[in-house]
Image (cartoon, rainbow, N blue to C red; front, side):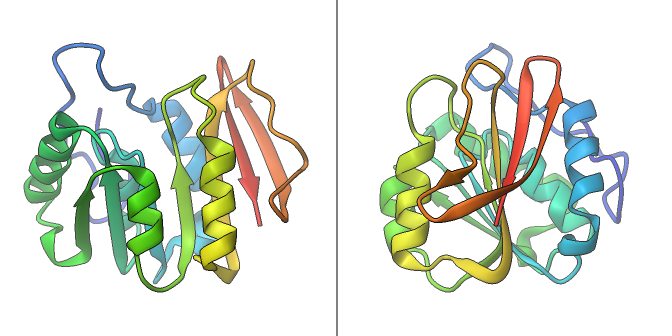
Length: 178
């Protein structure tokens, strides 16, 4: 796995030795950031269920001003911190370990881009959308990116957010909400 474009382009990111984390493939990451091109520069990003931190680091590489990384796994937090350090992105990155609910309840401010990539088939999307809405965490013109399996269909509207786009890449679907 590597950073595809921007100031950290070509940097290889560490991934777990086992299958405990499901990193977003380079193909899906490249497609996602093609969609997000006009939103990324100067943005504030929340990368929830960060895994390796690959998506948030890609956003920083492409000009995001800040990324908050969150994950409940100690192994993931270690990988995220190592990958951020490898890219020299410590000044723009905030890493918050722990349960996604606590993170969403305690994080401050609003985000231009919120990336949700939870473990598949655990029913975590709707609770995330609910808390984001309840806390007003999405900026007025912001986007929520929900990565999920094609078997898990998300509705056109969820917790007051409307699906703007949906793209399929093999077994992975990117649903973009505003």
